[in-house]
Length: 90
Image (cartoon, rainbow, N blue to C red):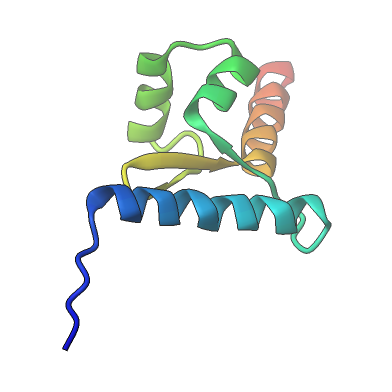
């Protein structure tokens, strides 16, 4: 009986492969929502990592966490921005 060890590096590589595949499916129109990593959201909103953390903790923006990496639905971020804009106008 052969025993194979799976290392943390193997799991990280697998995770990246899964997300590359998911992003490929998203880009090909198989799913309408694109997922952004933290640095993408920070650039998009012009905010610091600590501000993004505060937004997550206060549940002001939607997110999911997989293996220590946070992902944000692009449309969810846009929806929150539009909702806050409408509040500011009224």
